[in-house]
Each structure stands twice: as structure tokens, then as C-alpha cells.
Length: 115
Image (cartoon, rainbow, N blue to C red; front, side, top):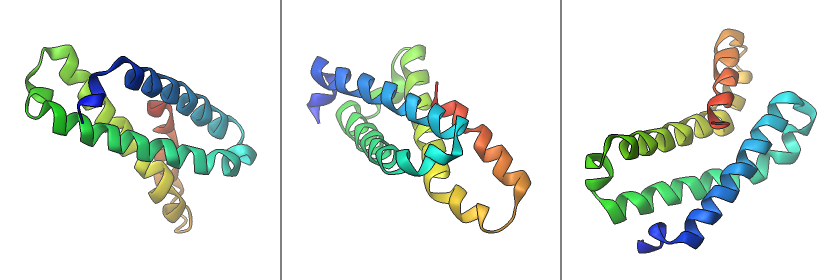
């Protein structure tokens, strides 16, 4: 998993982050386009999960013991991954349960992904 520190991998991650941000905004602004970006968003989410696991394997406990800003970025990545999982997999299930207040709260979390 040493590839996580190489520039080409970080560039790929940056480009996928920009694409993911665009898709999150598009799916939030126009619900009719949501089915179109659903599969690409799930692919990016799987990439984020693999990236986070590989960084954890490569850095080990150093991922949590580095200077403050790096730990903050690690926590932010984990938070974005959790919000993405909630949005992609649990929100559709909850929508079928007619829990409108919970749905509004989870939809508001989509903007966290755009960070």
C-alpha cells in the first residue's frame, strides 16, 4: 500500500474528489439526475474506502499520531466516507419507511461530502 504516498495516486484521488463533489451537487440540486450519477458515486465511494484502508495499512498508528492538521484530514476522510455510505445505502431504505425528519437530516449531510 505504499502507493498512497506517490504523486500519481494523490492526483487521482484529487480528481475523483472533484468529480465526486460535482456529482454530489448535481444529485442534490436536481433529483432527476440522481439515478444517472448513482453508480459513479458508488464507484468513487468504494475507491475512498480502499484508499482509507490502504492509508491506514501504510501509516499504521502514525495516521493518528501525526501533526494535528494531518489527523484532522484523516478524520475528515473517515467522516466523508461514513456520510457517503449513509447517503448511498441507508437513505434509500429510510425513504421507504416514511421518516421525513430523518431523511431531511441525512440529505443535509450531503453537503459535507462536497467539502
